Length: 440
Image 1 (cartoon, one colour):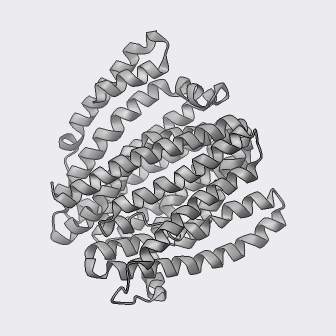
Image 2: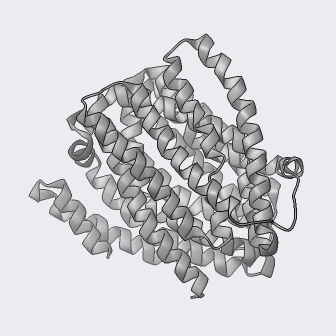
Image 3: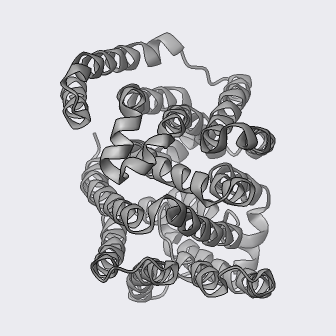
């Protein structure tokens, strides 16, 4: 394994584990302080802010990261161009957001603080730092940001507050700490040697912008639609289940960040198929056993961590674990298409999944609430992934399902069997621990 990959893996593994612990700690404290409905309202505001940041990013970061990985000598220039473009769009979209919030009249101060996160989000260096071989720095910045947020949330909980605005300010403070650390590091790097116009980067991101936006939109609309269509209670159930699913998904996020630059280089070197098989096998080994164990312990685990009121999110969590497994497969195929610069083939499955997810979500929320929203996402991904597989096959890149998935499926069966065998003990954390040992 190359030294750069080893260093990146160690930095990401340690840092990501710490980040997930901190973030999960914040989520548990918020759930216990706000309750199910309060968490639903908070998650709604956070998703609105993240959606605004998504508009402002417009796919710029992923384009800049790809170019930085392909042309290391110009990496700093691409980072700075990305920053200028994202700040410009942040100001534009926040300016449009403010009057809308004031006209809506629902908790305007809370929503404006959540929307204000768009500005520190412009400094997000995930992907860019990886392409520059500086993943360890970015991990430290993220850890510092989460420590700031966690410390403020703990103080608010000790003070007994259940108001949304202070918790939103704590989130904004954490993201601002990250932005300051990134800003000072970029400023200290000296001249980039080349200036890439922000306008040119905006233009080059056209189709990719749509793809990245649609990809994230699949995950962003659920809480918003649940809050608007079913109220804060189902939104709170979904938010808790998604936080737990996100914690389970941590290894997948780690591998995705590790392998993305290598997929870019493999596509340029003509080694797509072998690299894709390695990525798929690695990701399947991580997500399939976790999904199997989580499926069998969903309800008791939610109640034990967030409180008895959240046990009703059991089927929501089960379907989100299916989403996690499908994401591990679909992202590998999609990222290979993107690395190969097959932009239409990359965009089309994402667009199809988004439209299908939206339609299914609108149809299933009235019937099954938060579980319906999660099921809609799982079905949309399951039906869109074969498109990416088909498009890659047309480009001469094929993988053998038996070769890739046989051993990960056996590992998932071992974990599931162990968790099921320990069900008689009545302690969900004992089941989880036994499953983890079987996985290890």
